[in-house]
Length: 277
Ligand code: AMP
Ligand code: FE
Ligand code: FE
Ligand code: ZN
Image 1 (cartoon, rainbow, N blue to C red):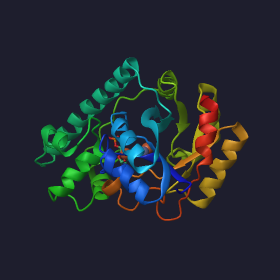
Image 2: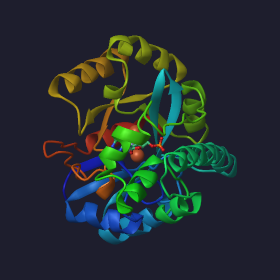
Image 3: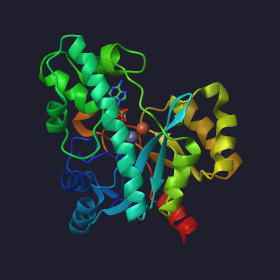
């Protein structure tokens, strides 16, 4: 069994295109020994992934990814989540906010002349956490755009024609949500944050309880990885990594390999296990 891992992957429970079983099978074919399932605002893919993990010999780290309010948007990953009724109820509330926002986006698209309904989007999504990638993929299938990328570029991206902001919880609330489930909160893909204020933000997050930073990311430039690695060392944060694999919804990014040069070894999982033990 290989020693390589991927700590950021999406399934059909949110906006990935692989069902949990297929995803784990694929990870094993790619020689990965562990993956974290990090769907947006849901842990509903984890059960199936864990069963498949037993079958294919892939260790599954139960996780998730939540969006919090920071300037534009910030994502926080949670690892080694132990879900409870209370935790599930809070996630359900986050998904409710998603659905309210999706309706607003669909209305804007209809005003722009597209024949799209909420039911179409619910059918397009195979899981309970529905988002813009599902809308993008439907627009592509209907021939309204050539690619998911184009759908974001013209309509769905921040500030674009059919963009509508979602009500988000604060970084503090996001971190507490993960901690209340016994999880390890980690700042996701810092490259999408304002780089001028990054160190300041990392210090604030550390004070709020963040325990890791996603240093290794499929779309990082070498200098970015170096900078995040230095920040992790300086502030005593675990340096995690992941590709943000979404299957066909981000076709250039492969599990465990990103654009081709991503590699992450198992020792970071041991570090995480150590801090929750
Ligand atoms: P939502 O969770 O509904 O706000 O949608 C955000 C998700 O859309 C992110 O998690 C990404 O998976 C995806 N996404 C964001 N920007 C793009 C883009 N330009 N191209 C493709 N997917 C994107
Ligand atoms: Fe996503
Ligand atoms: Fe993200
Ligand atoms: Zn992600």
